[in-house]
Amino acid sequence: MKVNSKLKLLAFALLFAASAAAVHAADAAGTWTWSTPGRNGGPDRITTLTLKGDGGALTGKVASPGRDGTTIETPIANGKVDGDSISFVVISEFNGRSSTNTYTGTVSADKISGKIGSVRHGEPQSRHWEAKRATENK
Image (cartoon, rainbow, N blue to C red; front, side):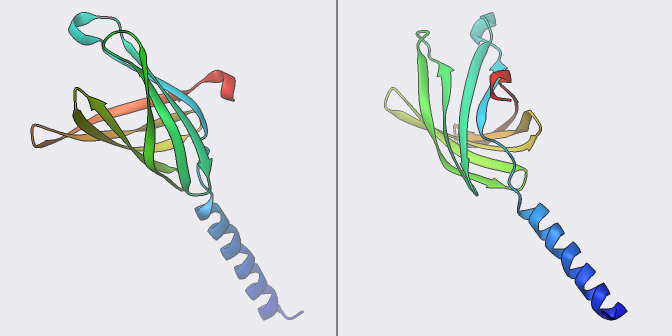
């Protein structure tokens, strides 16, 4: 094999390896938890996110404590995985009103870190969220 052919073969192999790494989706599947401060100084509220991945699609549900202490489970919608980035929407209903939260985040090992976007009183809102993978799912 000529040197030029070897270089072309090596370049092709490196390009293929780089492409495969870029297409690899983050391992977002599993159970994730995070806490937010309770209302009026009450105990922290623990939220649980359960995700399943299928290629670039993401499905799952969010479970959080309701005002009466019962757990409210809400399915996620429009879930996507692109490399180590994830995004999904959670639409909640309360007293006949609908609230939409858009989650974006970056998956790294056993942590998801990102932003939750919403609209309140006509104004866009954004806050940080960080979830940790439940240890039983390692």
